[in-house]
Length: 109
Image 1: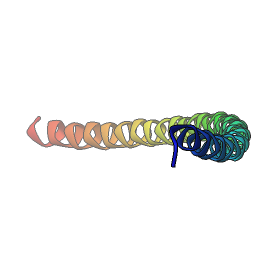
Image 2: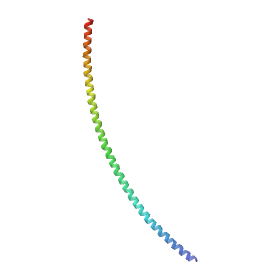
Image 3: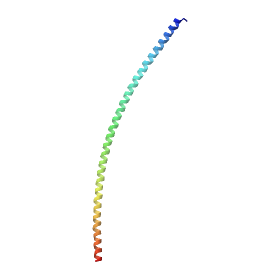
Image 4: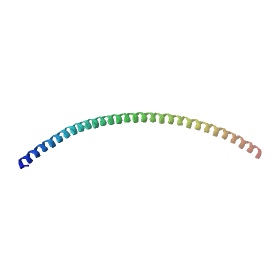
């Protein structure tokens, strides 16, 4: 084989390798484009999920606040009732105590 034949074979071989590299780059580029589209859709889905989660958190927070206000009102009413009953008990006990003291004073006098 002469050196011209070797150069010709090298050129043919380089052409085939170049063609295969070009084909591989084409398919690789296509896969990258598909991957980028998939990543874009994934980001959009994630953003939607974040929005939904934020809305759910807001709703839950409002419900929790309403429950706290409602329970605070119930607690206030219960404390007022207990206070009222305590005052009635103290007044009743006081009047009973005063009667007992009056009777003791009569016996001593």
